[in-house]
Image (tube, rainbow, N blue to C red):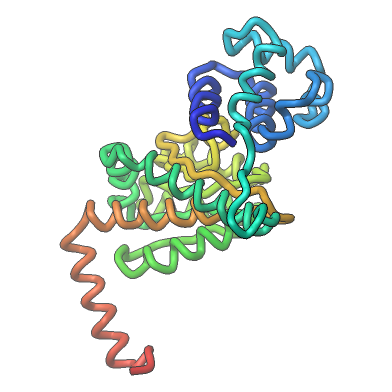
Amino acid sequence: MNEKGADRLLALFADARLTPTQRRIAHALIQHAGAAAWLSAAEVADLAGVSQPSVTRFATALGLDGYPALRQLLREAAGPGVTETPGGKPNDVQHAVRHEAANLERLAGDLADAGRLAAAAAPLAGSRPLPVLGLRAAAPLAAYFGFFAAKVLPDVRVLDTGGTLLTDRLEQARAAGATAMLAIVLPRYPREALDALAEARALGLHTVVITDSPVSPAAEPAAHVLTARVGAGLVFDLHTAPMTLAMVLLQAICDAVPEETQRRLEEFESSAARRQVFVP
């Protein structure tokens, strides 16, 4: 996707007040911009699982003259395609990896506003305990974040399984003093994750969400939304940029409580040396 065109699309979608159905259309167009640029309104409707009139109303809700104008915008975003390299055209795997590199480059640009990251980190740094939600595809990212966050925060609770116990654990965290929650919500968005976000808000928790797009269904109920694109070039999604964003957020949490971070890291190193956790 052409970077300038992609930025234009994301800005257009993010600034509009979209209904849940229209958010589904926006997400489908972002995820499949290269193909959608050449589809009819009916084919886009099938792609998003909505009706054809919904696609037409979506285009007008964006302030465009109609679907043809939206399709032209998509074609501009799609760009001219991949050019040949000295070794010939990249294969599908190379293309997927290069797309991940582009996702990281875009993330680096988005992180230019350090104040926005610090604002999201501050409530997480002060929450005792800190619940970290990640279901299905996001569960490994939540576990990875939680593993390292536990080295600098005294009580990190990774919530990586759904069911009725999930609400129990949220209520227990709130009763124990939690004031904020980090949620990692990635495609395909689990209904249980969205329900847990709603429950967290009802409990009075300050919610920070890492997701893939400003039009993600997880973005609307969150106090702070941080986005990193998911790679869709292989059979299963690539989460390189979201994982990087999670660790950048953890760095910002450490920066928010530097003395506690240093003290707990020193305590861990002393304990690890005493127990001979690592091979010399």
